[in-house]
Image 1: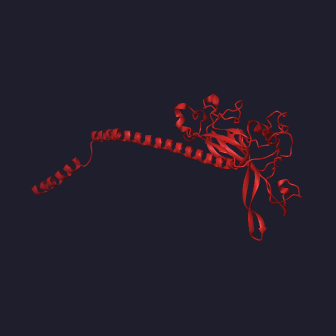
Image 2: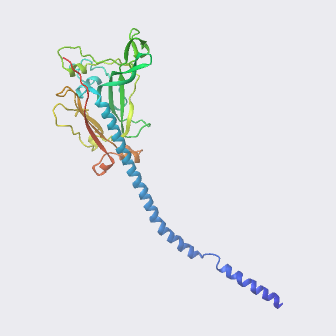
Length: 333
């Protein structure tokens, strides 16, 4: 009996000691949870703040890069320009001018994308590489005339952001060749033969008119209509804020001959506009182009009213401008 009691005593004592030290009390758990909450909550707030700031800075950087890239592209395009339309010229081609000023003003000669306003319209001399066959496999480059238009578009399309965007449209001439092919599918007569077909609706400008200025001659251009080319988006997330909503005002060059496009009477948004001198002292066109992006729209994409321009948030609206002179010009008597 004494042996049995000794065995029970020696076995129960370690078991009781082990059970006594095998876990935490409820109070200890509560204290640990409170301490963890006090430590982790500020850390979570700090991490959220870091991630939010990083997202904001990334949105600003992306907008700045895209604005610069878009302006560089437009600059290279304009450097090939030989004539840039001013506000009056664009009104003539858009069918919004007085017919006494523009005989063809009653008909829109340009595409009319939904919510689109033409800002830059110009003729340029475009290079077509290796477009002419000389003999056998020998080829040569050729130059053709091309009509280009840039639009500021603000609509309700769900494909793009809820702010504005810039789109580019172009039609260009073909290369005539007496031993070439007819371009009847593009709407040209079977008797007209080309190595490269013109774009459908393309017509060259006419300088044969006498007794009127170069601007008047260019303003009377009429296209063939039924264009197959459509404006292609160049860059999205352009500031859509109107002047009435607090957007910065237009600032054009004080130099003579420059006119604002769109004109002061009709401009609403200044996220993309230009100041154009169609014919300068050296007979060349010059233009100032202004762009302003909207980085806020990258962060808030479901409410256009929350991403409007404000002076206190100007860092979210990167802007850039450039002055360009066309490398070519049109001479006419």
